[in-house]
Image (cartoon, rainbow, N blue to C red; front, side, top):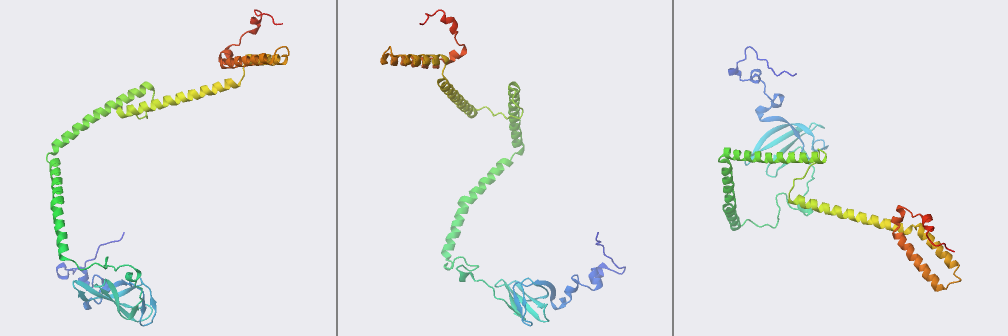
Length: 323
């Protein structure tokens, strides 16, 4: 760790010497103040633009730093004008640069020349740095007076009443802090009781219906009740539609798959058509139509036939024996 203690000699007198620098005959800035009696202070100066040295004619780029001799040479109103005298690092020549507070820039006075790299906005379709409207005429005293009058009226009619209303509101809320605090705490306690009762009711519902503990239940109000009814109605309609589609699908499958009774009737119709030499064509067509209607009716009632097929062997004994 660096030490910050200083050695004070035995003959050091604070009232006589004032400081250790005065006791040793040195300045606080050290070697930088060696020309302070001439009004010159050694500072670190950085070139603000590109220059050519007047002695060696070499280019020196912007940003190069020098130990410059800073000196006050005058004033522009209350702003001091400083001069920076630097020695070229490429030769033994000296050049001097001064500040120009009037134009807010630096000016090369001697020993070098500045590289012209200025960009004029007026030549490129723009405006001057401190000029926004070149067509603006001189300031009209009457217009300035009207503007100040309008501002005064706005302040009297708008700003001052608004400030007074804010001040009255602040006085109202800060007049009796204890009463306001008591009212707020009472409202908080009532709301806390309501929230606690709602939480207990939710816990009872969750435990009754086996709902997860992390499920958040919505507070019951008119909006939630209407929304729940709408969702229930939509779910009911969706379920009815699914059941209707399922019934239509089952009916189509029953119509495609023939039943055993319909197949037997079809075979009998085919046999009757094959041996129809004894009957006419009209009788055969009527018989085929009747058999087709019977087959369709038996297909629509196939659900009952699939439950338990009839015993044909027991019924044949009671029927008349076919020839």
